[in-house]
Length: 555
Image 1 (cartoon, one colour):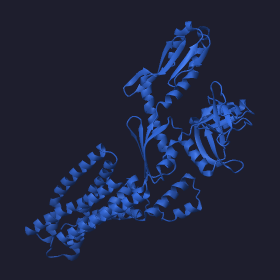
Image 2 (cartoon, helix red, strand yellow; image 1 turned 45 degrees about the vertical axis):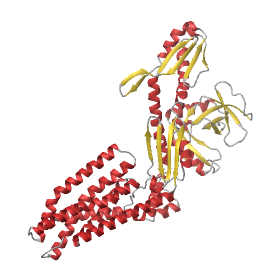
Image 3 (cartoon, one colour; image 1 turned 180 degrees about the vertical axis):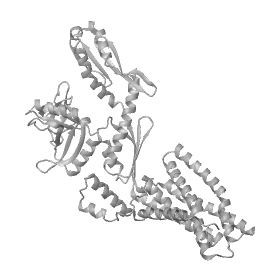
């Protein structure tokens, strides 16, 4: 039998040893997971660690690999939500934003249109009344000049607004093209904000996908309940800084035109009347971090971008001594009096927070405000006990499958069956190492793929061993029969595995969810099976033949 080249032997051994070491962390899952979580937390804190984090970090040696196979929702337990994005919410904000532009555009035509005021109208349209209808044509043209083209996949289409005249009113509506584009932007923005919020709290391997035109699927393994997940992602976290008109204890007080009556978050019975148009908003925040105020109480420090810093600085300089409301989700969480000019766009939010509340608020502000509200159409909580049962059942199925295959191989091929079982064990280690390294989430269908791999892994060995039997019956010596068996079975092995690999790839690209999880495991299993059957088994048999030099062999 022609000996395998030394470099090939070393390469095969190196891959096998890598598989052992890379798969090892999964045997100590909880310990390594705690180590990884502590490492991430310390990195986020700028290298500062708590005693508990130091202890968790020391539970696993730093020189060993620490990548794990992430467990999916069905194995780990967690929360499942299907949310609908209420895209119509954005129309009102867009229309409200148009009013200052329309007002400014008509200001230059005051001698033609007379006085201009905003008239009551539905949320999705802007109605502006002019006192001199004779200038309506010029007014409509001035407002139409504010329109911008809507960019779509097919190029530039319609304008973003439609302007018409109805009596003494100018009516501005969003065009159908703009509504469609706005709906798509709203869902995409919601998707990214939800992903940012979930990632910020360190949950593991969340699945966040768009479904249909206005729905988002959220699956987060390891979180306590669906209600906890809803609290995290469903909070709008809309932050604004509004001028205060006055305070009142009357819950039904008339706020006046373009003002809003908002309750105080931490003072029951106190209400603030604030100007509806904010000076700056949370969209102009570039950072928010939990901190402590001068009294050592939990707070949130923030920083605006350049435009927000200028507006914030200009307002504080012009309104020293006036109260300034910090509004979060239509509640006044703080209304400090401006003591001096605040340049630079830095500030702090106080409001009788706990440490947990200040941390959560900072996360929500960093992630940004949801552009529209969410309606949860479906919610499920999968308990960790069910996930543990699934893991146990999957392990049991894999062990039973491996034992059955191992017994069959030994019963059918004797010592050569033992060699095949050694290759099978190496195959499983390399497969687990690959899944851990690439971070592929393991689900129940993935376990099914592993169990299938166990059966498929010995198919190549069966082809090789049967071919060796034929060569022995033809009168070849054991070394030559073994060499011929491996060489002449290779084409059949490649054909069978390539067709299986193509099937798995089609499943991956066409399927979704569980099907793709199964396809990933199956694809990797086919690749590792070919490697171990053709190279590892051959190396083991070759080492045995060179060591024992038998005159006859029984396969």
